[in-house]
Image (cartoon, rainbow, N blue to C red; front, side, top):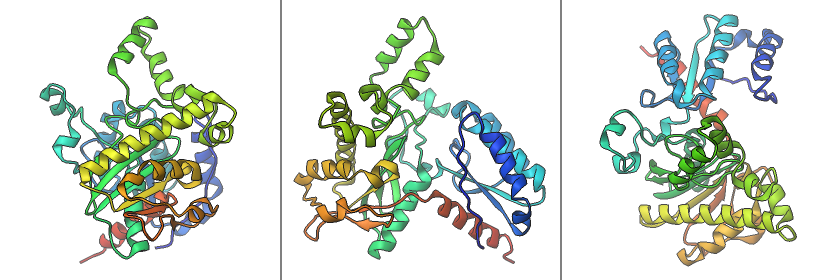
Amino acid sequence: MPFFHQEIQVTKENRQKLFADFLKENYDDFGDVQAFGLRTVHGGTHFKETTLVTNSVVETLEQLIHLAPLHLPPLLSTLKQVYTMHPITPCYLAFDTAFFAELPEHAKLYPLPYAMAEKNIIKYGFHGLNHRYCCEKISIMLDHTPSKLITCHLGGGASVSAVENGHCIDTSMGYTPLDGIMMTTRTGSLDPSIVLQMVADLNGDIDEVERILNQQSGILGISGLANMQQATEERDFNPRAKLACDMFCNRLCKTIGGYAAVLGGIDGLIFSGGIGENSSFVRGQIAKQLAFLGIDLDIVSNDVVTKEDRIISSSSSSATLAVVHANEELVIAQDISRMFLESFDV
C-alpha cells in the first residue's frame, strides 16, 4: 500500500485550520486513499499497538485527556475533521507510548504508595515510535539486532531508552514528557521539592509553574538561546551557552551510563532526533565520556553532514555507534499497511 506524505508547517494557534485546509485542498488526491494514520502521543494503559479508530476508542481517549491535555484534544479534533470529509475511510492511531507498554514493573512504577500505581500513576514513556524505528533500522544496517542497545531521541523533547533483545526495559521519560534528561525548553528530572517551592513562591499559580517547567527551562532557561545548535555555536565565547551544553551532555551521559549498567553492557548506541542527527559536538562529547567502556568514535564519519543513516564508530569500538534519522511516518505507514491487509485475511 503506497502512502501519501506531505509536510505542512503549523503552530499551536493555526494547526486546526491548516489541517482542515490541507484536507480540502487535497481532497481529490485522497480519492484512492485506503486508510489514514495519526501519530498519537498517549494511549494510557489501554493501547499497546496501532489501533483502528472506533467509537469506543474515541471514548477511551476522551477519558485520557488529563494525561496529555496539550496533545489529545487536537488529536480528537483532527479525527473529527478526517471523518467529516472521509467518513468511510478507516483511520488508525499509532501510539508513542505503545513501545513501552511492557516495561518491567520495577522500571514502570514510582516509589510512591502502591495505591497510586493502581490509579495508573506510572511511567508511560514517549517518543516510542522513533525508539522502535531506531531498533528496526539498526537491525537492517547491521544485519542483526544488538542485544544491549541504547537509543537516544534528542530533539526539542529528548528521551533515552534501554532495549534488551528488542524489548524496551527502561526509558527516561515517565508519567509525562517532562521527566528524564534536560531538553530544549523542559527541565527534565529535578528534585520534586523545587516544584513545591515554586508553587509557594508563585502563590499557588500551577499554570505558571507548568509553563516555566515546560517552556522556559532546559537549554533556553540556562543559555537564553533557542536551541542546542545556537548554544553549540556560541559555547566558545558565551559562558552560559557553554554551561547549557555541558549540562545537557552531562545529564545525557549519566542516563546512557546508567542504562549501560542496567543492560549489563552496551553493544549499540543510536543518536536520533534533531540534536542527535545534527550535532557532531554532542555525539563527540558522549563518545569521549564513554570511552572507558571501550567506545571509540570515527571522527570523520561523525563530522560528515548528510541525511543518510550511518555508522560513526571505529572498527575497534566495543559498541556500534550510529546516526539514524527519525522516521515515525514510515513506522505508522507500515503498521497501517500490515493491519489493513490483515483485515482481509480469511
